[in-house]
Image (tube, rainbow, N blue to C red):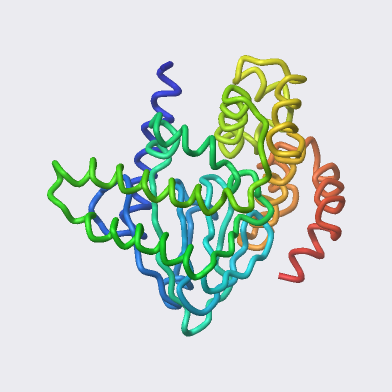
Length: 299
C-alpha cells in the first residue's frame, strides 16, 4: 500500500473509532450497538453531515424524519435503515415515543474482511438504493433482526481477547439474516462475482472522491478498467449510470452545505470543484428544481 493510501486508511480508522465511541458504547470495538430514543436522536450531529462507519437502525416504536443525501425520509416502526459511509445525514425530527436499536460497524470490517465483502456483494441492495435506503420489515422479520442486534449488545462487553472475534461472527450472522430479508424484494441478479466486485469498489471510492472528481475516467483508472466498462458494469448491476451516482452525491452534499452552513454559493461551488458559481447553480437547479438561493431560503 503506498504511504499516502496507508496514511489515509489510518486516518479513516481513527475517525471510525471516534464516532463509534461517541454514538455507541465506549469500548473501542469494531461492532457496537446503541439504544436510541427521541432525545438522543435529536441530539445527534454528524461531523460534516457524515459518519465514518456503517449503521443499521431498526425502529421499534414511533417515527423519525431524517435527511439522507439531501432527501427527506420518514422512518416508522419495523423499518430498517442502512447508512453507508460518506453520505450526508441529519435528524430532522423524532416523535416522543421514538425508540430504535442501531448497530454500528467500522468500514474496515465491513469492506475489507473477505467474509463480509462476500456478503455485501450478494446483499448489495441497500447500497444501490441510495434514493431510499429504508426497508419495511414484517413483525417476524423485525423480531429476527432485533434478536441479532440484542445478541451483539449482550456480547459487546466481553473481555477484550474474546470480544472482537465474537462480535465479528455475530455481525456476520446479522448480515446473513438481513440478506434473507432483502432477497424477498431485491431484483433477481444476473451479474458475475467480478462484475459486482467492481461495482462495490466503485461505491467504496465514490464518497471519498466525488467532490473533487466528477468524471468517469478517474474512477475507471482507480479500478484499472476502461470508462466504458465501468459504465457498463454500474448499469448492469444497479440499473443506473455512473454520472447519476456522482450527481446524487454532489446534490446531497450541496443540499447539506446550503442548509447547515453559512458558505456562499461561490464557496460551495469551489468546495465541490465546479468550474464556476454559474455552473454549480445550473447543476443544482436542474437536479433539485429550485435555485440554491431559493432552496436555502426554504430551509
